[in-house]
Amino acid sequence: MLGRLILKPAYIPRRSRMKLFGVVQNVLSVLVIVLFGVIFGLAIIPSYYLFVEITAITDGKRQLVEAAGICVSIGLGYILWGVVLLLICGMMGGIFRMRKDEGRYPLRSFITIQWAFSLVSHRVAQMFLGLVIPSFLATMYYRMMGANIGSGVQLLSIRINDASMITIGDGVVVGGDATINGHLVESGEIVLAPVRIGDGAVIGGGSVVQPGCKIGKGSVVASRAVLPKWTEVPDGEVWGGIPARFIKKTGE
Image (spheres, rainbow, N blue to C red):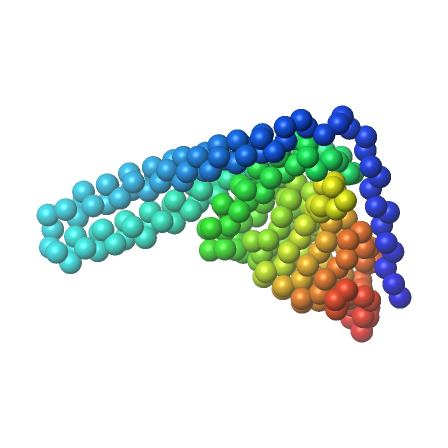
């Protein structure tokens, strides 16, 4: 039994490619580097105040107590920095998330710049995201980035890319190191193709779900499987392999 291939999104006419795209891209790249340097600094502010308060309490005490105060403040400060960083990246990624319809767009256009900024926000967040999965913090972060996530979801991957193009139903489990993409680049175009995962589905660890895929309720994408772009997995089926194909019905 084979799943159905979803029709590829048609090209959506847009204005001609952005003039001086290369120049704009290079200038924005420099600005983004500076911006995220500033973000790193801002995220440290709460940690700095925590360090000052804790060390003030232990200052002048026995050497062991003073050392413990410094070490604890550094450890807690790191956790606080990471949480603040997730919040900032989530907000920025959400602000600049893709709000375009499914379709094909010129690669040398503002769409690519908008997508790249959201991607960079996610890459920066990944520095800490791996330490808080699975948890409500990770789920909150992905929701801030624009993902539509149901209840009772277990997200164990930091590679859920293009969050605003991803819909995850209730009770879904996304395994560690699973990669889910909502875009691809081909033939000089950037293609936006949402991924929809039905209630109770399982995305195995290390698997890859390509853009445009639809995974039915209760279905399983086996570990390290690669689900080709625009593939539809019917409800209650197990798919595996490279490329992924139907293996059996769940429960068999």
